[in-house]
Amino acid sequence: MKYLLFTVLFWAGVSHAYQFNEPLENHFSQEDYYSKQRAPEITIKKSDKDCSGECRYDINIGNGHYYQTRAGSIKEIASARYGSRAFSYVRVRYECEDGKKCNEHTMYSTSGKPVSFKGPNCSKALDRHVSYKGELMCLYRDNLSFYSGRSNWKVDLPATPIMGTGVINNNLAGSTSVAFIGADDYKLYTSNTYDKWHEAETTLHRRSDFSGILDTHPINRNYTAVGVYEYVNVFNKGVDVYYFGPDGLISNGTLANSPEFNYGFETNVFGQGNDVFITAQNSSERELQTYKLSRRELTGLEKEDNPYSRYALVDLMFGYGIAQTSWEVNQKISIDSKTRARASFDMNDSLLHNYYAQGRVGNTQATVHYLTSEAKNSDSDLVSKGTEALNAVVDFNGMFGGATTLRLELEKMASGGVVTYSDDMTEIPVQEAFETEYNSLALYLMLEQGLYFGLHSSNYLAPSAVGFETKSGSYAGSAFDRDFDIDRYLLVVGYDEASYGSRYETSYNRFYINGEVGVGLNKLNVSRGAFEEAVGREEGKIQGKYALALTSTLELGYTLQHRSTTLRGLGYSLQAGYRARGDWTFQSKPSSSDKDGYYLVYDRADLWHGPFIQFNAIF
Image 1: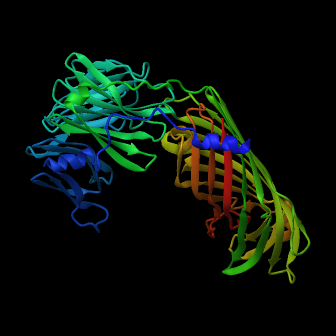
Image 2: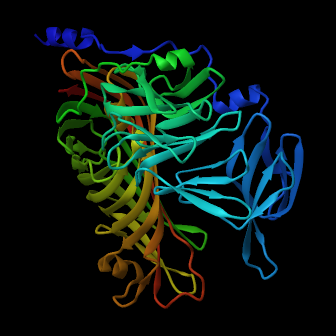
Image 3: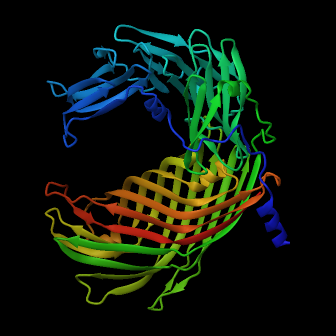
């Protein structure tokens, strides 16, 4: 029966893959294509690449050559390349005579003398561009603004606000067009004259992607092609093309849509004459792909009939895994350039068993991991407590626009080991068993394409060696603190392959790299007993309780996943790899002017690493 189930899961075919035509053998971007068509190039670089501070910059546009001689930094805010002209709108920052930072905004072009602007940065704009006449165009969530060196004006949008993404683009002949998605109705809106707007229904919904999902190409002043990456669910996602004429939508059809691959990140639409090209990321293959459509093919576009037109209301996943984790701790107390104390830790590295369950109903998903390992006898016959950990995650969808998910994560872990402690007052090192506890609470924003960032707080009972200095910097004593704990507050950012795969892929396999980095603050909590043992007195303030905290995680692995459309998403996944995580605590040294009392000297680095394998059944 088990063999039959595996065979059905493995061989059940994935259907409903659709491509209007095959992608071109070689991919290329709009910039590549415009360069091939001899559109003027734009380059901005330092005259002397080794210069620091205020430097001279070369701004080259086509046959023009301009110098910006006084610049601490230079930033291109907007640019555009047409067949016979090009523009670059830059902000130059430099130091004024009074020592303050000053900004200048200038439009450089192939058309003549640079034009000074009064300073729109368009920092809150969804997109920025330059018209054929040299006007700065900024698309905001509620208007389209135009700026010239002499005047400014706005164009009202047919629907506001915009849902997270909007674009401006141009053709080589001189036309520009705007496209965006309405936040209230998820319709596509576009115009290339700005006094008349066209609209079209899409399959986008509140859980679709909305970052880098569309682009527009004005074929001429009357006709426009727009490409949109439309995510409905993991079985129904891809790029749709919309073709507009003077009276509105002419045709709308599917370019590429498949459960087998994910095509559409960073959609780019461009062309010349009767040819339209669409380039986007095929994230399943980790490569760009370019499709070509003629004007005749645009007219004949048809929407694919995909049976998976709704997002699934319920998802379930259960799994089991094992991991062999080595936990290495490096700690020593150095004062007056001498090592005053050492703590050597033999942590419990027994095989970890990981039991996993995940369920989603509507917009809420919950995940639970339970990890356990057996106790371990050390060489000294002391017993290291086995590891027991519980990790619970709750995802709240629909609180933000698009695919962004609010994740609440709680973790509780208890483990043990054997420590060998010695200091300059101890003739024979002391060994004893100890226990450690870890409790954490984290709040993350899970973004599109597997990225995330958030806040992480934790309390870590970490028996440790501690040392103390006097105000003058002399050694005051050291001890092993069995009750030492750390309160940690971190800002973290990372990438999670599992988040990417569960959202965008059905059946795929590949090597992957997960990573996370975090920086923050550690509050070091020393017990009074350890303080008294170290310095030999009960009274005295403890300074230096705060330290820089750094954390980093790297996971190298291979993932294999198969989900069947025939069996309504039933499938399995397998991950195997090697995971390493490091936590570091860094203190700054006190100066002689620091406050009265004793200064805590503490240094510690924890490293967890080892192989793992995880199997999941998906329902």
